[in-house]
Length: 366
Ligand code: SF4
Ligand code: SF4
Image (cartoon, rainbow, N blue to C red; front, side, top):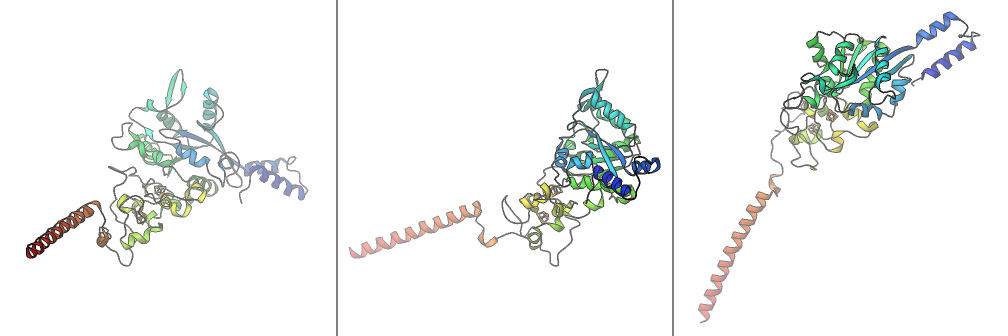
């Protein structure tokens, strides 16, 4: 059970009182309890982003985001959301002062959004001497000072939708930007468009409780605890894939591979976690997985092109993907038209035959 900072202090004071000690008069115990609660400022920098990941996190019900970022996260650890341009009450110079003050302590930098490199003036946060401060200037200043960077959402992790097609803004992810700039601060990618709140809260809690060594990352710097399973291996429609039954049209109740589902190449625990406080996720709603957690997202060409399948756990018997469906009851328009023509032709021939017979009957009677 999570414990709020207030309750932790109450509990500690209560225990001390039971032992006949007043912690507020004993300097050694007072210091020990003060040290037991570690304060970690968080600077949340919104760069090239739609703020969808912030919204996803704000919608978290258990734990509530205010508990995580303002009060409790794990017993003995208190995080303080020092700067977030969209949810903080302060504005203008006051907000920037809060950011600069937090930078002087060991802080965690959360980046939401891609790093815009072609024209950094596309993204400015705050100003100095009447000039906007670009997000790249913030990254260059704060990146080396932060003790950890959490790249939240696919844009911050890999460039996301901002890097689609011709990538006019030159959007890249935080890790790639750090590599170009020679910044060595550790980065953890928490991709998703938008993220699942538990991916962020779980990573933050693991880092605070057990340190960075407790979080095993994959080759794309994603925590394996959330991003190691294939969506496809836990999909409710997997039986249809294995049996070769594929939806041809939206609304068909079969596997969505042929409509572009990226489940066979996307790694995340969406089928177990589900979004909207455990209610549903893309495939529960019969929408293909668009592979939003992968570095290739949003993919070249169309989002709805089937991806090549390389690493799917095979079923015992594996029918070819391109098996024709329902060959004997094909009611496609072309088939229907051909059938109509055939029926029509047969009808004309029958009428002609009957006319000829009727004429012969008449001739014989005459
Ligand atoms: S291809 Fe997509 S819809 Fe089909 S089984 Fe895999 S994850 Fe599910
Ligand atoms: S199911 Fe696919 S598209 Fe949907 S949230 Fe998960 S990884 Fe992203």
